[in-house]
Image 1 (cartoon, one colour):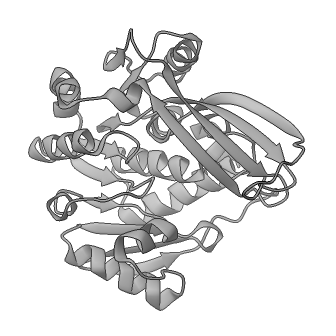
Image 2 (cartoon, helix red, strand yellow):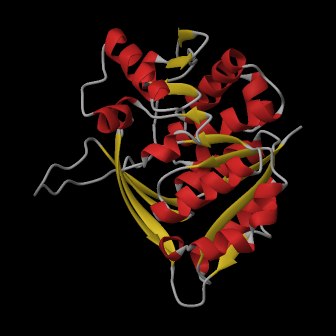
Length: 304
């Protein structure tokens, strides 16, 4: 099994559940609320760890109650915490999540907190965790210059790099060339190309545009429509996993997919099998509320 290094943030998720997501200027009465662990990097690390992956997680948290929640969970899941920096001066980040209970759709506002103060020196101080890992996964919730630095350090050491461009923000043209697997959803793909990415032909055209930028493999996640994969040799659609129960909450489904995909590569699954497996993990995660708390274990995946 290959080792995995994930760079990203932890935040405490404050999840508000109701019959709709409030519009601008609107106040609604909710039905429930949940407080739990979140942050894309953290969710992805937990997904890989719950499935049995060998995971190092590089992040920065405060020294507060929310940090204690994170460290306790990582210990339970088996994530190496030696690369986690604790900040004396900044609080651990938080995220406010609005969930439509009827559809599972959500809207999220993230405040990175301590993780927003990450600098390149933090990567240098933890470079051994990148060097000894064969798979590197990151997103865009950390400061971009630090994310870019970590991505390129991982590429230099020979890691397989997975880049989940969420939340969508600018990426330099040079950085596209350091990405082995680029994993946007439709909305994120549209952001980078400044054009609609909805129909099959638009999705195929978008993937080709990313390949032309230097990305080695493109995986566009399509929610209930599945996934589209493309590289220089092949391209295909993969259907979404058919669930036995209803969708409850889609929060964290993309993170579950990315963490599962990193794990699947770590056990040497081929691209198609890794996507099918990751679709299943992501699908199962939508049948429960919350982000990290909804991610299944390997036994839950195998027995579903």
